[in-house]
Image (cartoon, helix red, strand yellow):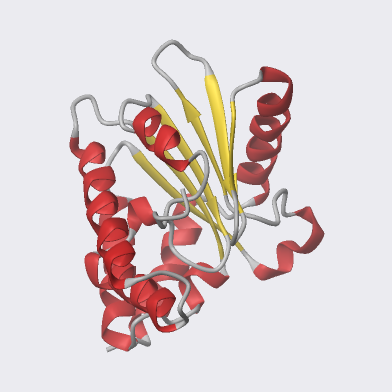
Length: 196
């Protein structure tokens, strides 16, 4: 693992994600990888290279893997994707104003798909926000569920129902507390008007 930029558990998670029936995402601070434009993803990755967190080779590995992961959203039948984004995800400019404008446009286009739901958790949700770190929940074709979460230094893939089920319950609470999709998209459109 030390020679790769991928966190522990992530390669196995990606293999399961590629065939999942449902993907539930929660992200703090940046747009989740599956929903990123290439320019946005490159800006995030190049930032990691500049900080010395990863090498150029590892950056390329990440970008190549991300493109493959995003291709899985186009399969038939498409997975149902539920994305709950902390408000900071859309307010934090990544890659400059033009990159961010394209990213916001991309989110709006993704939300037009019948298989994608985008919701925002506004800053004033405060302590009612169910998660403090990013989490992804997968429902596989056999209806089993797994969870993947990560911090800056480690990733964790969880399969045991007794650990996954509380996360699924918390995610459902989060979806109820989050702004409805229509209101969330209106907020993204309003923010988009202020970008070039």
